[in-house]
Image (cartoon, rainbow, N blue to C red):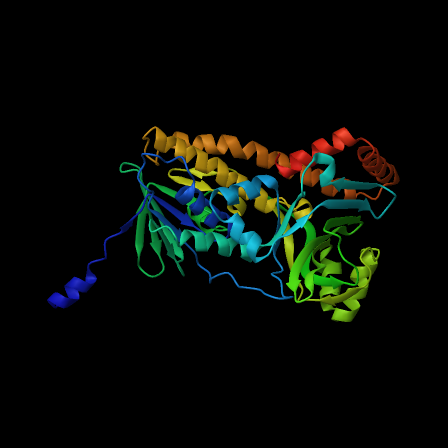
Length: 421
């Protein structure tokens, strides 16, 4: 072997960081921003952060084209995004505040109306395209020289050296990265969770969600609408777009949860027939459905990691938990994970603890696991309650909705809790 061949055989040294975040979607990018820009690190050296993403940059939609994936951001989520300097850009690009929410049961007369004015707020939250949020966060990360965004980057191996308190990631392009702390924000089918050997408890909801964007003949009135049908919930989430003659409020993002058989039927329909079926299922509350974008559907599964942490590792967002989309809480739970872990890391920095210190992650897990399990149990209860067809159950749920709607103090307490106030 020649001297040049020997030189080529020597592996390049590992790239060293303080924190490695796997996944540059909404939760991963928010976690990186929370560590890179949150005030309170006075006296601490800036963290060297690597953000790894296996995919391409988020697509950009404009005009009357919308990302089919949207998130319903609560006030708590908005505050986190504002604290890292991303919220202003998100609102400047495209976000739709909603002031009201209408929920009703297709199998009865139960109905609830939530109004932001009843809780002295300007709105109940914002419907924002996922790509808008992610892009704003990634652009914010580009303003911090201590953050390295590696794309495309796929993790092949995860190894832990407990003596040195370091984890090593082997990438598919032969690069090696080491850090005391690795964070998995790589989605429901997390590769990092699998490499760490953390099992999940999961089950199929027996439903598929159809998502798309529609235009209606009447304005959505900046209201989030949800109708509970026997086949599953149907949500119309308000969007807005700036046109030459002003803001247009005739577009909505829909999430229609149905049985797999019905999903197959609906996905095969022509646009015209789908619009008719959708309008009928929604009781024409916003007039005719006049246009529909490309439809997507995906299976609904509930998934929860048995542990959120391992040696030098923490799971966030969908890597740790996924729930039914009927309340639109998935992204918000992920951002609450971000806020909790940020606080623990800042606390460790203030006490000059190494980031590999196990107590940091144990406190994070105690903070978030119980809350997430509670929300998952609540969503499961709602799904079962509104999926039941027995007459006594239908009567009870409709009576319960009417009763809640007639008790302003209780109803407003529910709204404030959902908003994160």
